[in-house]
Length: 244
Image (tube, rainbow, N blue to C red; front, side, top):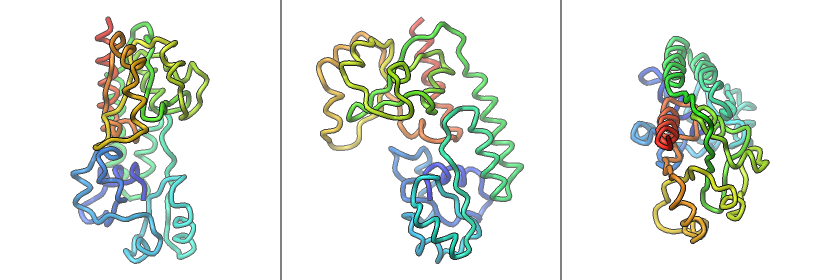
């Protein structure tokens, strides 16, 4: 019922074990496993729909579809609510947690070990540069987030964290320009056009981007504690090394 648990379940499930993933698993802006998700019937987090699938276990997030989670539990369905990953060190333990719940402990341990080995290889030992996340509506991420930890792992200080933001929030464009980051990290645009994205074409931001490095990443690689997160880490490592 959650895009991150969807992807962990697809990575860990035995053949025939997984019966449904959320509809967000097929959204390329949210999910890094769109092709894999197409093999499963989608659900929209509705308790009635999921109950009729007769699952032994439902994987959910801690913030989404709370009414459905409560109703499923009242109906006797086992629901594991998995919190979002806020640090790289939590990725492996979460993989093991979900795997244990699915009866796939050995597969979870192997997946976690592979991730942790890959992460260690991508560490950067250079003086920290500065980077800023900047998304539609001026949204950024600050301290205590997975994105912030990726920056720290790859040799960057986070402008959002230094501006005092905890979690996600809005970074005024003026504050971003005054910070003069070495790198601006942004996402690939959504199809079509939206007013929320107009700020990304502002002349002041365009001037900043001309002198700073720009890392345009796939948002889906940053969202969840799955192996594809290593692609985001590798991209930031390459960006930091390119500054040298």
